[in-house]
Length: 416
Image (cartoon, rainbow, N blue to C red; front, side):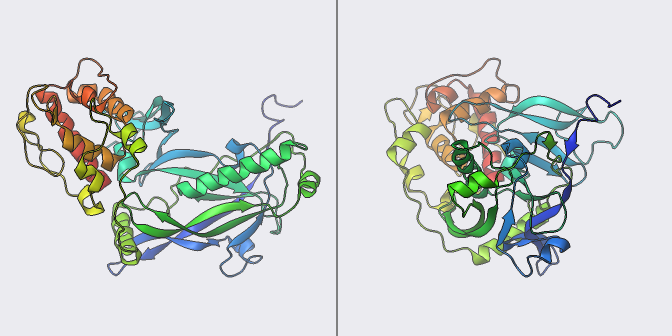
């Protein structure tokens, strides 16, 4: 007799991994990740696609996006592997994300090197808040968006799928868009893209970084070169099959380097990046949504005209006393009573507030979410609310404002 829940399960074999990055070593012997403009293939696939291929013939045995292209925010540690996996928060739609995190049972925080390697010292917690805009791991680069694309290589001997990991937002958007477009085309006929012959390509794309620097990156895309009739004729049936669980226990080395590797990669990038272009002022509509203030719906002149070097200037390393906390990139100021100055929101300098929100790319809802998520750390007994940034921070007293400024300065330092 069959075993219910087991004997009817069918799973596709994973044959190997394909990479689009490799490790290089600088003059000091420190390894760092470097993107390449071709696919690095396992031996059996390299025999079919020799040299440095930029195109691969692929097929999807299934067409559920969660099966062929699962994508999550992931955080790895060098001694525990995957330690956090979440969905992230979208403040445009107020969709609050959750995550599954490995925490130290004593501290309740992420596991660390000091967490004992023994039973009960660490445990997985489900349903924790996941907001990348205020997560120190994400801001530091230890947590990233990761898509695990799984597909077949029909020209390569063997039956199974290969996995390709990418943390490129542009690649994730393009692949998701291509899959949705193909499914929309197929919906007019049989509604599936299973076993449709496709082409996975890697190619250059010019982008501007948040700092206004022009750079060329390599992005992935999926092409279908056939006709509607070929799409209808090519689709097949794979009822009951499951994709293998993505290999995510060990970090993709080309996506999650060590701290030394990050520094080496940043140094290497500086030598090949084009000179910085002037930062264009935000459109008024976007500025209004980022920096709303009663009676004056616009960014400060400093935030509008700031060059990249100014926006990522060093922050104070040691917080000033609570009533004299130094704002980002500025001098310590004596906190003023609420409403004492049009340049202050309670005890927070407005120019500093707008500047750090520009650097962190925060909206008003992001700011309020951060304050309310850190009530205990800031010494708040209740949640703050408000339609504008100044209304929200205006509810902080002198001591709370000092803690808030010190915490935000540290986040800006991590991002810079």
